[in-house]
Length: 165
Image 1 (tube, rainbow, N blue to C red):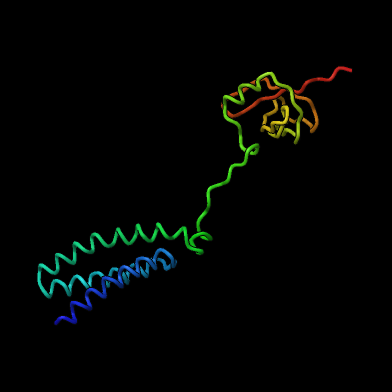
Image 2: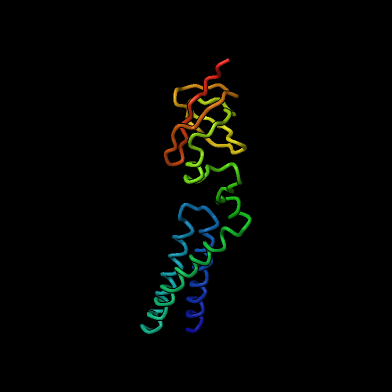
């Protein structure tokens, strides 16, 4: 009779291993069904031994399943497969990101040069600071001089400065 209890404990360990495998192996839930079958089989064996052993098995299962899931999801991103399967957050580089609104407000009235054609959105350079801008009146060619006429949130609106010769 003791071998049945050992088998029930084995089923619990198999359930834990299968839950971890489900995190790493895409199976459409098939591995989870087998893990659930192992868990139910172990609990039935424990209850057949005694009701106290059965309830202890239920408590262990209630603690084991969330613990194993948390453990598996904590180690998953650190594995080689996990690094390939999950997205890493974007790395923000100085100068490539949109500046904060207070820094943009300082550019109100500033003059700059169009780096990419504004159709109506493009990049402009204001004293070495590259900023995405919106043209006030549609298309603006590259290398034209512009002036910031409005700053709303993170959007700069620019107007072409007419060159009078």
